[in-house]
Image (cartoon, rainbow over all chains, first blue to last red; front, side, top):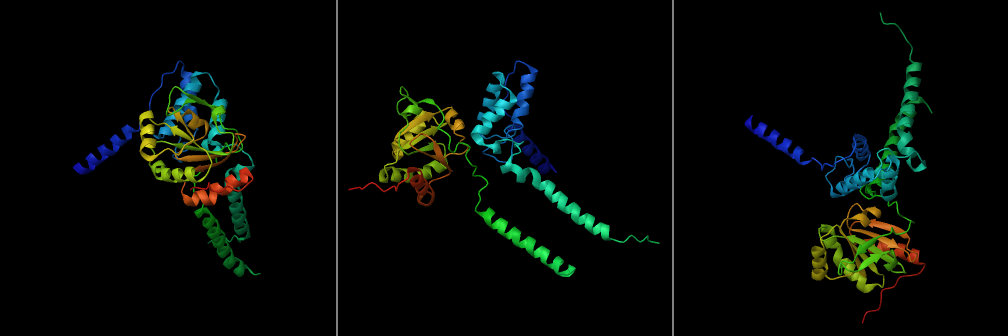
Length: 132
Length: 187
């Protein structure tokens, strides 16, 4: 039991290390915009994290750039396109709907439709006989 | 075809499609991202020279022939592995390699080339990593092929060794240049 508790404390302290730097904002809107943007940008280095979650040096740099741009009064759209120009669609967690990304956007729908058709065909053919 | 044959064939077809898909996926490293800068000009910059902080490099100082940009740092383990290859190619071929000392301390960067040799035509000190971000760098070492007009034509992420050089970089450089690239005769 003691070991378990100390293990849990150890795990918890690792979490504490993951706290990211804090920035000072002039208005609440700026802070909100900053938080929103860093949660929508994917870390190019550590592929399945947003830059808000990632500890990579690159994410830290990108967060700083987002911060500077928010303070300069840039819009969300211009900040996201700044990142996209450099790192491609990959960096956006909400990638644009364009031919290269059609598979990404429509494959789930296609799979759903195929399954729907199969299920309907099967179920439709089944004879309903009330069980008695 | 009766229903039984269809039910028998479907799983086999699905299986074969998956095998083919996975076979191709084997070669596809998800960590390698396409550069968004292909066919775009090298970004503008204004950064000091590593060996002489007084000297400021801009885009105008880049070679006006086919050249490579190599992003490295003394902190980057794979860069140490790559370095002897760059030394070799710098000697063997007359293709200028522009070094970008990325997010490094000047003293460490200098020590690196002092200890291991300097394969670079010039070294740009990008301490803050701004040029790196403009180039879309996400993991050193990264190497860009730039044509004589200053347009980025190819990006390679990772260590360059003989296999990468001969199979990838040389053919692309020859294609960009429009002529064969021969080793410089050494005496």
